[in-house]
Each structure stands twice: as C-alpha cells, then as structure tokens.
Image (cartoon, rainbow, N blue to C red; front, side):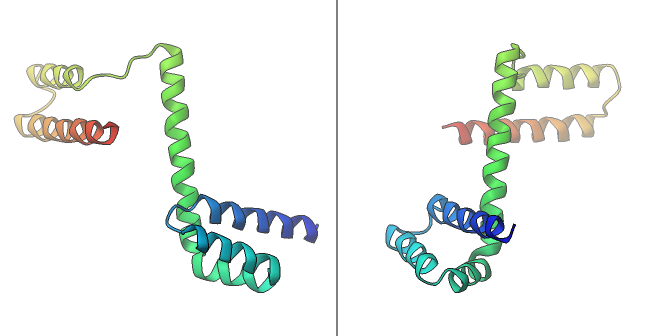
Length: 124
C-alpha cells in the first residue's frame, strides 16, 4: 500500500511539474532530475515549496473541465444559452409587472451588461 501511495505521489508531482506553464523547460528538467536522484527529499521539497500552488492549478483545471462539460451538455441537449438581450427582456418584464423596483432593475441590468462584456472578452 505504501508503494502504491508513493507511486501516486510521484505521478501527481511530475504531472503538476509538466502541466505548469510558469516553469521553464530547464526548471521541469531540474525538478524531474531532483525527483529521480533524491526521491524522498525531492518530493518533500516540492510539496513544501510548490504544494499550495499545486492545489490551485489542480482546482483551475477541474473548474475549466467542469465548464467544458456543462457547455457540451448544454449544446448536445439543444438548450441555447440565453443571450443578454433575452435576459434584459426578462428584467424589463419583471420591472413592468412591479416585481423589481427601478433601483433593482438598474443594478441587475448593469450586472448583466458587465457579465456579458466580460464573457465576450474572455471568448476572444
């Protein structure tokens, strides 16, 4: 069981080293050599120095994969993504019916427009 845990740790560290775009090729080679020559010390040093950022990179990958899966499911199911114009129409309808006050409508409208501008910038 310890051998399995050790192999899993080494694979996790090496995967993180090679997926990290902020580390140069020489840095990746150095970490790999360090992990092969002094495996226990190399693993401990890596986890101490880069452990927190290792977790953040993994979290970002998982969130990106989740977003891709959700988008694929949405497109495969034929459910269109509501456009900002559709959302503005819904907000205007809520305001006309008296469910939203003028201040709430303005706040929701500005948030929606800001979100649509940020989304358009991210897709470019």
